[in-house]
Image (cartoon, rainbow, N blue to C red; front, side, top):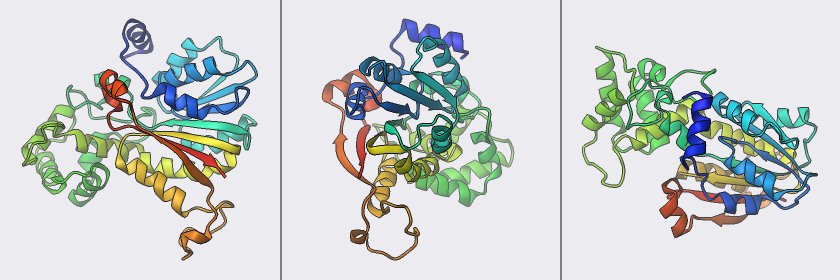
Length: 318
């Protein structure tokens, strides 16, 4: 889907509705004149509300890996002088903040960690198990390997690990084995080809989930190094934020929640303690405190099905 096609679709339908948009922005904005970062810009749903709710003195900086999203927002927000845009990964936010001269001065950073409905609807991106397309799943299509490349190169043991750890898939061994058997004759290239292998491998169907849900999640997380970049930016964020600055993170599964929980439990305020040093957590002064956890309302779930598993974590710098 090209940029013009995305603009037309977004103007004509409500096809991309940000999860808990109002709640996220309510907890992000502590100063109407402040400096904010939308670290996962997507198609601008959160960014537009931030700009609406802040004063003319405020500044909003935004990052996204997806060049389609960047091009879309360049058109949509071209007249907004308070807005600065960067094509890149949020794990490099510390570098960008220094370039923008906002390092240590940011009042809040927003992370929406879910896959966009734009990605799911755009068949050629390869995120959807309901549409046949090349197995890509990269957020940044200008960088890195596609899912199909990993599936045709990795060992059975490596594939099994990815499916089990990142997808919590209980049939990971059977799926990995059948992937290896299939690729001996034909390389795996398309989404429905993979779905067929998964369907033949899963012994018990979950009536509430498609058989491919967990495997597609696992492969997407692995391909985009989602948990690694989340860990990296959490560690860097303390020095990017101003005193009492906030992180607002919208998560969608237990793996992301676990990363945040571990970060809160085992980091100290000056970042000087070696990670493997055997110090009990009660000796560590926390960098952040979780001041709020928000779950979607019944109305949100009814009107936006993507919100079912979502949670907002609000962290404040100590």
